[in-house]
Image (cartoon, rainbow, N blue to C red; front, side, top):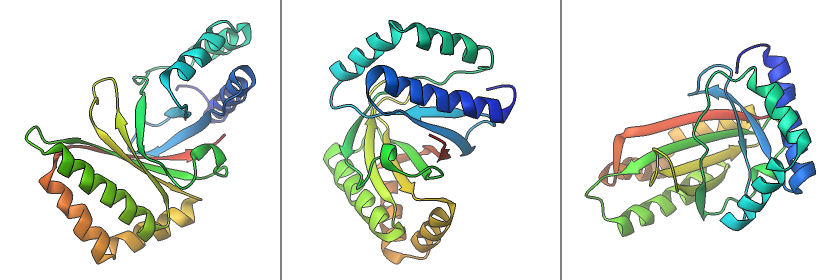
Length: 204
């Protein structure tokens, strides 16, 4: 988003609060800190099924308050990402909606190789999530991207309480033989050239 970072943060927070007011569901707001273009904002929410998501969208489209917010925010938007709907394959110990402000989310997306055995891919991915969370202390989850150019990719997410927890957890993971051995096993299943990693901080 263009313009003042402070004013954009306030818009992002307003969007989260208004989303919950209209739909009754929490919407977590993030500001990108690494692996994204400067001024990048993102939002995330959880639902049990697509019908629930569609019902929420209908409520938003019927809201004059939401339309007004969209109009005001559009003046600052210079680029939009594809909206992503992902399936949660491994639930985290705690969801981002309940995390404190300042929590740090590290997301790593990677596509399986074309010749990969999907059963072996999922066995390794599930193991990686378990090891990652246990070693780093993060609330770790695994999702599969359901739509868009990253369709089929697996998303490994690690939620840390704050910047200090991220630093400590990352350092512990890098020095862990179990973590590094498990991590390197992923080369057998994934196209590493497709890997992307981002870091974001919770602002609402």
